[in-house]
Length: 474
Image 1 (cartoon, helix red, strand yellow):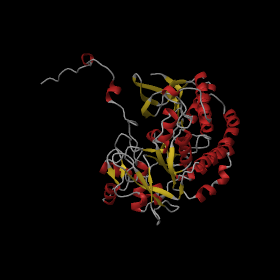
Image 2: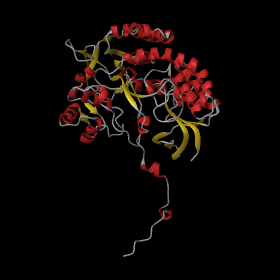
Image 3: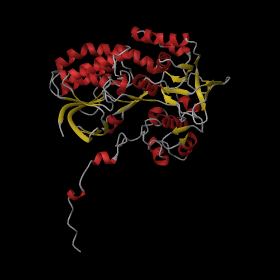
Image 4: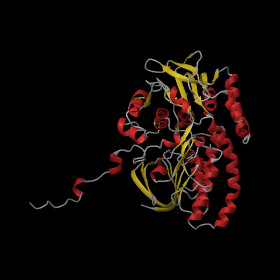
């Protein structure tokens, strides 16, 4: 098992920039990512037969990043599924050739974010997918989600996905936006901090509206119906807190639904390592406590990118570079004075870019009223087939923490490890008990962090070579 100065987990904009910066500072750096190419969600590489000349701003940035990474001294292990990380630091992963390990003196965690879902009846039907999942399908495979798609939820992915579907030759039946138009306008000043991104998003919205797509502000999808697959969605008004509001219900015929309510920082690695966390809805929910250097409460452990708080791709590279400089400082490769000099400008740029990201995050920050929109028959934990009614009963019987609910019902014990259902479970506990979301801690993290095959962990071996103890004397 080789030891590195620094291991970076995650090859998105934050992680890749952290790795490149670390190598430029003279550190022996290993970058690990589950995908077969760096770039993360936003700068994702086209897959398979589509690896051609990049088109679009994100594709060009991703291509440039991968070229920089290839030209750097960073050791890359892609297509690696990390299932255990221990202090010290030891990283255990499954790769193309089986189980492998690596050690480092410092660790940067840039594992991005996962989607937030507000379950509705029928969201388990074939043809329903998350907004972020739809971007993967559109960017990597260049496949449309369906022939007639409803795009619903909240936040900047709504216009992004709707525009991508139209650009791919598809049809958007409707955009269903939980936020009233006033919520978008209220964030206008901060959105203008990045006029390039503001104009880009405004262009998406203009194109969608120009195509005649109905845009239902202040509405959510209440139910998805269909026989074996999506057939139609039922849409209703909501309050500013996303509670169901009186008014006529709309029915939209479609064959696919893309829906999501923003992103949640992926914190399983830093939580497993015992780093302190705090509840910050403006950053996506539970986030690791970091200082201005991206340093966590655990020595030589750093968090950056959306995994440290959902601030978007504009700020992620800056946070990654600051984390790498902090690691180099703490390992004695650069002086404190050099660290301060080099991070001065980066911090100002990071703060400016973060204002745009925070404005976007506010449009998707979880509202407690959303709990009342989850119907009793809606499956909350898809892996275990648990409805809201089942979870409400367990909460009423005394399961008032996520760990309690997990033990009582198996909620969060399926292949997703709670990444899909845990936020909704916390929302239901808070609504039923009257407690603040800040009091509802995430479940205790446990390995494996991702599903892994036992055969992959064990690898090939010969039973005859196994040492056998002598039988005990009678």
